[in-house]
Image 1 (cartoon, rainbow, N blue to C red):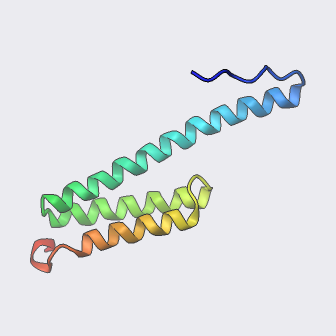
Image 2 (cartoon, rainbow, N blue to C red):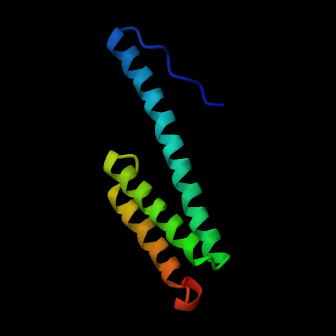
Length: 98
């Protein structure tokens, strides 16, 4: 386990450390949720569940866009993830999606 830096002395540095910790936890939970939503889309495509794919895809895209807007992931990363999910969803034949 890496050693932690020495504790800060002034009040502003201590506050910034607290803020960074809270933000880090929040960002981690949002990133975890993004991965879960992405996997749900992949599972629905694998199961060839057309209605489930639509719902999961819409929810995943929304979450990815919100994370990019808040700066949790980079906008290009968000675009890449959306593009890959879109390609995956579009790879289903029309008869499977309906």
